[in-house]
Length: 287
Image (tube, rainbow, N blue to C red; front, side, top):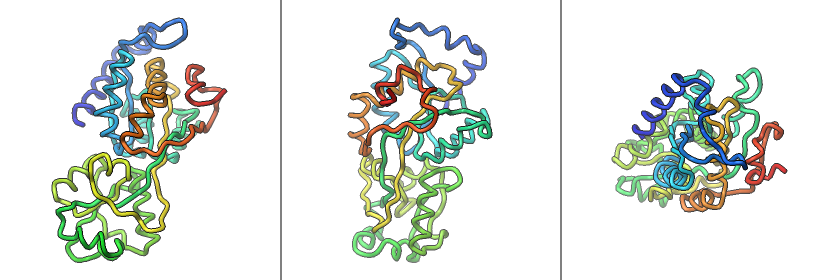
């Protein structure tokens, strides 16, 4: 994760030094597809870290000849960093449509004109099987167990991460005080659970399954991540961004996403479809 963050910073410094010429330096074929050798800066929801870092990113590099540079964090946090020009990005992969809406329109800086919804993953409680509360979680209502003395429950910041917002909704709907869960950065939650610092935490089912974290369902609550992708309007390397989205939503990318537990759905484009790059028409089903 640290390497990815450093790579993103290095990419930002490179782009700042080269200016708009970095886009024009990438050669393309007559069909408009990139010929390889470029870099694509992808900001993505941290719940997809295992998919992006270990499978999809390396597979994209091998297939395209381009280089995937990814940075993971809470989707809402990434929106703030894009708008604040803290992070340079070509592609934004979010876990919530609310995050994308925060980049659209003049009031939000016109960073996005459209986004495509492609998958989802239910919110669940993932627990450490070595926790002294593990059996209670399997046999008693979760609302009761997480309020027991000594129970350590983790979540993410609702202001920075859609998962934290969904977790807050789950607690509220079940009349569980918000103080029952401690807030941590999304990229730390898995590590803290696996290290035994937490008994349980709120996760998406795909990331829990990906890491062999046992889970329990949230009763009748229907809360889930909604995954989206978009090429930012002022992407420094738009041709590489297009190539990445083509790969993500193509057959190889879909296969990898299924492998990592995402529930894929028909791609749906929201926003100004006239701004969608023509090379993406087929994978997005725009025309």
